[in-house]
Length: 232
Image (cartoon, rainbow, N blue to C red; front, side, top):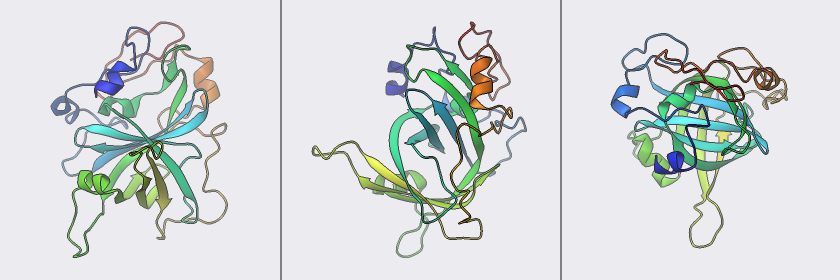
């Protein structure tokens, strides 16, 4: 996670540095309950009110959170194809991060955990054999089933631009599968201004008004942060 660390000054921001993968794998999940073996890989969707407000979609893969910035957020409507721009890998601890990144720091702004839970990879090859999830991402098409507090059902991430050869920044599409969890009733897009945290029940505005709020890591630890920053 060199890029993640290079962009941040941890003496000024309350974002987690990240623990070794072997340590993080034994941590308590974001909901505070002990993880069960085979319970599934974890995911988180955070709303980030920075220079522009967007959603950060993160999936646990090989000991890190693979991350995409989704400007309009994930949809529950299979007809909505949402742009997803890959960003740097984040530590697993980041799935619990909620608070205020100080102005002037990378990504300065307010963050809430809009949804979290587990996911199950569902990618298969042409012979219907399972494909490792990391490999499916390398190939540019990955399917998975989400079990979150808000998002449930099948989704797909598909790369349509690799960002090589001067073609511009890499870009993917995040699309809801056509299954029993799909909704076409016009409520597929969360409103960031009204959205509430799946962890604390607070809105972006409420978190921004109380930057002294304590961020609790998945290991239950706390760090006394300075006013104006999230605490870790």
